[in-house]
Amino acid sequence: MAQISTDIPARLDRLPWARWHWLVLIGLGAVWILDGLEVTIVGVIGPRVTDPLSGLGLTDSQVGVAAGVYVAGACLGALYFGHLTDRFGRKKLFLATLVVYLVATVATAFSTEVWYFYLCRFFTGAGIGGEYAAINSAIDELIPARVRGTVDLVVNGSFWLGTAIGAAIAIPLLDPDVLAVDVGWRVLFGMGAVLGIGILLVRRLVPESPRWLFIHGREREAEEIVRDIETRVLEETGGRALDPPGREIRINQRRHTPLTEVAAALLRRYPKRTLVGLALFVGQAFLYNSIYFTYALVLSTFFGVPDGSTPWYLVPIAIGNFCGPVLLGRFFDSIGRRAMISGCYILSGLLLLGTAALFNNGVLSAGTLTVCWMVVFFFASAGASSAYLTVSEIFPMETRALAIALFYAVGTGLGGIVGPVLFGRLVESQVVGNVVFGYAIGATLMIIAGLVEWFMGVEAARRSLEDIAAPLSVHEV
Image 1 (spheres, rainbow, N blue to C red):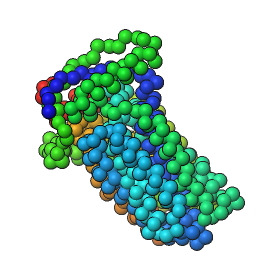
Image 2 (cartoon, rainbow, N blue to C red):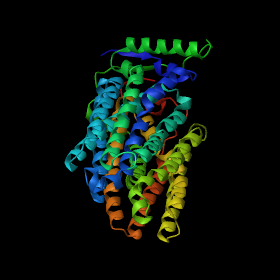
Image 3 (tube, helix red, strand yellow):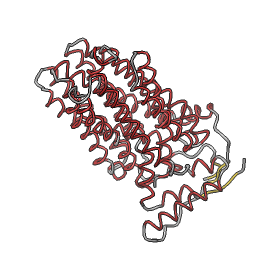
């Protein structure tokens, strides 16, 4: 492969915000809405699918296992599709993974046996996990550096739009006066497919990442895409002249990056960054997957909330989660990554400990517990969203998608598989102290992650991706 010099990264980073960037966000970022929808659906149907009349008849523990199976699929899907994304390009994979999700979520609606339900949840998760790797890498490689933190947090925070949509739709669909007990939860899964088809149509208009193209010997195609983007942005911003691009980088092009080189980058070249990524992902994955996959069971078990009413309690929590990244996101670009990430993680952990203490003392109602979660997750959501931003920024271009996949898989595997299964059993015990113990674990992991970020984190605010971590193929900067 040839050795080339290119200013494509600098040209993409200098672009003013335009309608074209919104196309990227809508087409790619909406995957988080799908994931939020899926997580909420599984959470709110928990009490419904345990009903003998549901056509499925799961136990509370099996609801937790189903959540764990979904996360296991997401972890393995992220690793598999993440490797393919770095090797074959962002666009091919973010189209393929969405198709996997669509087929699997529709198939879930036809579940009549526990094993089949588990299988469908596994492949639905695999599609979503693959999306994370392809989507986050593509977004960061197309968005200007000066707003990358703000944009990423808003995109990742849109997960909670999905949870709000899922909860709002679930209210009428899970009402036995509207749809039969064995029909409503099936229709819910079909709603995810409808949204996914709309996203697929928009996503076809999003180009391949020029950064990926020029490294893989397709610099002419990359140049054409960037020129087209520049032309569109100029038209959309009134023809204002663009700032001169910054420095060029010189790289040795390559067909693909061996996994051994990826491992060397993570373990030998950037070991502290690897530890930061793991800490952030384990903390947020345990917290969120544990609480959200089982919150409906907590409400029905400890507060006697009717099955059909549990979605009402998820909507305000989703709003708090969405507002956190949206309102705090710009500070990740202005104040900086280390201060904001560590602050959000530590503060949410402390607030969670306070909530656990109140719950343990029996002073909370279903309503006041929900208010507590709104406050906790306002900060936790901004922190959790920044975890994906962090691992996408701090590793070289050739490893970006697989790095995202690896940290998601390992962190979520430790926190997101163990968490829901553990919490399902803790709730099933009907002992308040057991659930409080689970909350304490989640809080501790969040606080530890915040401290790791503070002492070892990389300040990446408003910096080019190539400046934060030079490509493995770089020859001269």
